[in-house]
Length: 203
Length: 203
Image 1: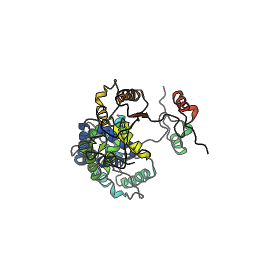
Image 2: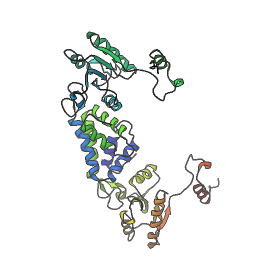
Image 3: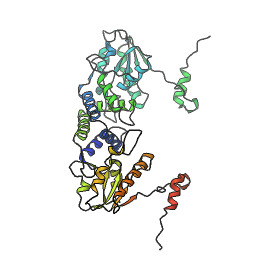
Image 4: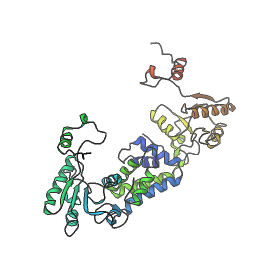
């Protein structure tokens, strides 16, 4: 695609670097910004730059935060004896949106992936281990996606956490998702959902 | 969706204002930028702002241009007696990419749309009419999308262009697109494609 202006070409090129945005979409977005008020572009550019350069992370749980301690860690009403370990900030947002969890978090910042060159030392594992002594932590929930890398990370973590026999380790339940059909579930999930069946309370 | 940081929330909010980008996609893009090098964000923000604030339009055809006269209008090798009228810069890019057109353009900057409050005076129609006298223009091609608003605009233009009986008016051919199936074509298109059939040269 040839563009009549270098400025357009640069903008399209930069937008097309974003995941899931191709050159056609990038051009559509660029022309949309061109047609809109100039403020739309300046506030977008400013919000992105501000977000990237001024963002800070919680010193305790490595969640995104505008302050040194994130709003979840700072909340005295939450259960600080329960720590949910997730790989990504997205997972914190997803779990928070369920409204079902009252504990605190620990964000690893990724999963162990030899292919991408990410080892345990690249993740916030040490800071998790340092968090435990002299704390009120009683249970650690490993809420890591059940992929190859996720399972490796969870396995590595549970080995490391053996140092602390007083802390219970749990993982999120696996099973058939809501609305899922039994016949389309994979065998491992279906098998585990039978083994780890939930007893119904008697009426 | 609740976010742990106002900065994230702003960035997501601004990205989600773009067409076709919802809050989930906006969050994905934001977290992608957060994980990438800071330069990725600064060059994106800079390219967008630069594009929006430094862009200029060709004084003759209203195409996007980095200079006062766009590269198409400035090109002496192109046929300046043939003007293709389009509604949008996107159309110029699309026609240029076919490599089939050697004339010049005139970008209206939209179509007449009473619902959106766009009247003839909001488009670059006057400047088209001013371009014709004392010029070498022999033919004007109306290459406007055959929508309700597009047809209205084309009709309005062809009425206005009656002032210049020496200039031929033409429209782009309507017909069955390449790879299109006859049975799925709408009746108007199929009807016109039969009436305006092209004779094959005899072998």
